[in-house]
Length: 183
Image (cartoon, rainbow, N blue to C red; front, side, top):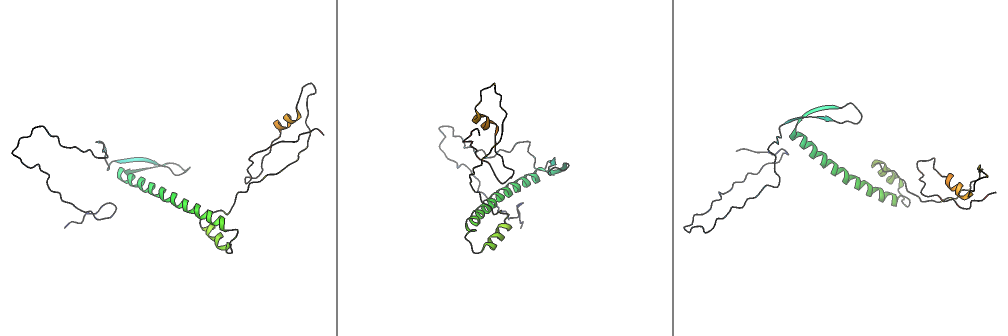
């Protein structure tokens, strides 16, 4: 008895098939009957060789490139495993994002903030929230204007005054200049 195993480690099941024969009949065929032909879903090129050795560049960030030689079949399995890992990572990131939403919602009213903080730390979740804000700033200054040209002080200020943040945490969404007047 022979125990056949697949590459993935599972046992193979062998099937036997009965010969497919056209039964004999005494009546002559009146028209030519064609046999159905099915084409496989995937056509393997004639030049495909899973045992072919291929040399390729291994990319490791900004370090010097490294070159490796491997069989095509091994590279195919590495690519398959990488795709599976990528799918798993996406699922885990979705779960972590869900946990972040739950923790952020429950944290302010929770009697056990230490536990929520520990869970957030274990999952690499920063306990932050986004706050929309508005502020009024009164600015005064001086500007040199040419007496021979017409000017609009409001346009001059609007064209040359801007607001920016010195903090990476603050994002300036919109600015509006109003109530410009000469003193």
